[in-house]
Image (cartoon, rainbow, N blue to C red; front, side, top):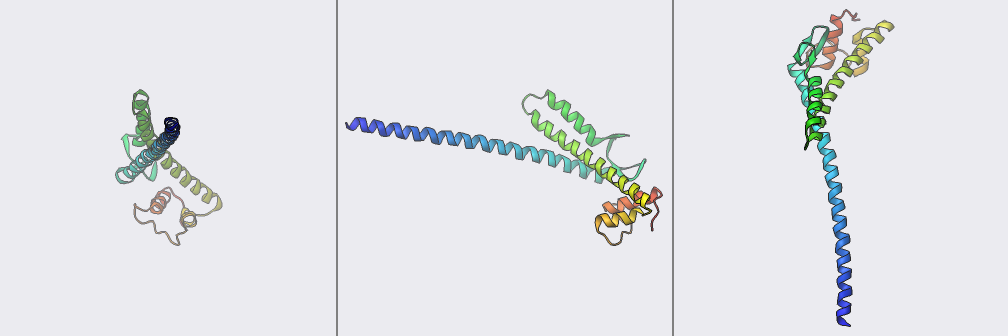
Length: 173
């Protein structure tokens, strides 16, 4: 009788161990998934930040768009767009860590698209203000909440737009 009771207790202990082991496996799987998402966000965000900073620090003025800085491989070919295309092509041929190359290429694409969006928005601001008879300065003051913009340093986003639109012939009032 005593051996039969010990066998039952052993079976219960074994069942508890199997349930705990399954929970640990699920938790490990979930933590690996979370780590993958965090790593992907860091790769995309870090690449976007690095290329945006490189464009601002080392970019040359675009002759077609005053006040816009571009870091280019050759004339007319942006580094961030080239990096995005090349990164995705390389990632398709990678067997083991292709998802990381895709994430880095997506960061480069984000950098390029963010710059294009900023340029497009600035152009729309100028067009809207020209149709209303306002100056680019007035629109920038409204958009940024700045009381007075003097068109100063190149490190100021507002200053870059003021310089760009002043050189494009937008009236300053």
